Image 1 (cartoon, helix red, strand yellow):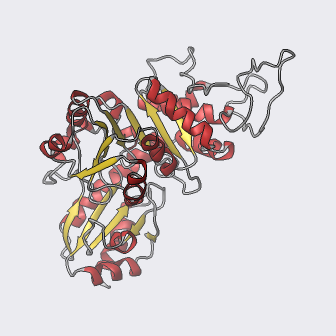
Image 2: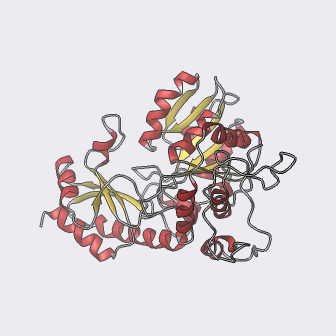
Image 3: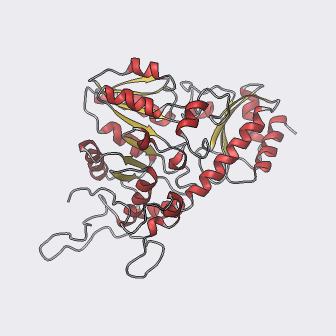
Length: 393
């Protein structure tokens, strides 16, 4: 049985409805048996054959496909304007590495110098074994990207915007034009933006990837990843086959929890972006902070591009550089009470982390930097907690 693409939104979902409305009702699907307004959780691993040994239900086994996963994929495809649909994976890394695994030996890749450190480490370790060359460049500089692309040889340009943890901005439309002119695909890690603030496929990207563990789920209780595609071409079918053959599909219970979260994503994303923007403004004037990295600030180097390609806010992530250096940054993270010292981002709880300690000596992250993921707590409380920790009061 071939891997089916994620279904399109049902024909009775009026296209005039806002994405927020469609997400809130999970595309308006009603269970046909019970008439429940929440889709059921399907955990079966195998399915009954028809008398002629066919599978007219569309399901044969749980490894390539699952009905609960399909429901979540349909909502994600709607949010991303993904004509090819969406594919859910067991983690963000599983989704991201599938794209690189789909390349051929001898292909060339251009990737960002500032990107999720776990994926960069994987690329450095695995791509040479597959005889795939990777060049890392500053993606906020389209001239540098153009110089790095090898027409005919470059098959994939991978960008991350905003770029973790410095929150650099890449011009998606500009990068897409350069990639396509050279015969390459453009894939965008949009984890820190979410489809509420940026829809890369509408800007010319071919594939968008999210660590759905982050704001898409938003409750720090699901590990998941997703790819959404612009065109159901042979490369997209290859990604579906890699997921199926490698057993990388998301589990049904995790998909069920993710669906719960997607229904409130527009509200959470708006609240968290508003909190991040307010924190950035206040921290910019703080005597213990030397610099705030947030694309929503007018003096941020990426602000103009971000304002053009982001909608309704500039995301929920920011970083600060502590004026007195690395020791003061680590001490600040140790003194907070409301913020939680933890890895990850995008949850309803606000998180703080000294990234250089996590990423190691090859990190582009300055040692005085603290990464902040704003949640949905009261902004006054979040600022007061950080203020006290920074001042040691």
